[in-house]
Image (tube, rainbow, N blue to C red; front, side, top):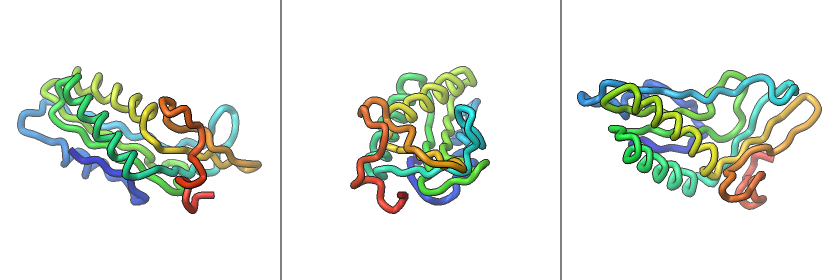
Amino acid sequence: MLIRVTEGELRAEEAVAAVESPAAGAVNVFLGVVRDNSLGRKVDHLVYDAYPSMAEKVMREIAEQAKSRFDLLDCAVLHRTGRLEIGETSLLIAVSSGHREASFEGGHWLVNEIKKRVPVWKKEVWEDGEEWIEGPESMGVQQAPAGMRGATE
């Protein structure tokens, strides 16, 4: 299982290689990509911040749950931090399974749970301002606490 929070570029081929297996009849890859708009505003770039050790721990727990729940063979979950430009990948998930249905369902569930539960925060930067807009809903946090934001502000 490949689990990582990093400032480095995310590479799909690395995630696919990590989950491939002779028993796999399906490998499903999801790329969360920075888009140029949000709620009618033109986005210049995004800044992601995280509590890396906790984020990786939660990502691993969620991946283990997905493996069990959807009979997946393996999972890779990688999340970027730092400044990301339009078109860059912020989240990369790859799953393998014996059959395609499990890979689609398990991958979909995994993406949703990562977005809900992992302590990663996203700041949208526009031409006329910026705002921390996303974080783990289950923690009731909409913005990274000051001590966790580091040098992103």
